[in-house]
Image (tube, rainbow, N blue to C red; front, side):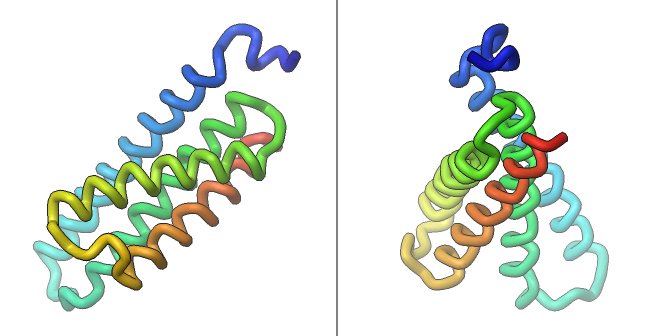
Length: 126
């Protein structure tokens, strides 16, 4: 058994990494809102900014989960990306009432999974 996992259970590591990812997502979202509010950026770019915020949150969750578990970076990062993307995807779509299978939602979901996987690989090698 890996010595990283002896002190922490996988569930604790997963919950901590989701909290870090959600925190990063909310901070990035707040920064993007302020940038859009105080600048003259077109509102059509909000979709891309939302995808970037999701990617940043999944990336940090993947790093945290990969470094916490310490092995299988692709699998741990993929798990972090999928779980965090599903949480945020479902919450945003339930609040806004948009179609769950809209093409931009699916693209954000895929980007979140890829960034979580990359973060997991970086976290294991950190």
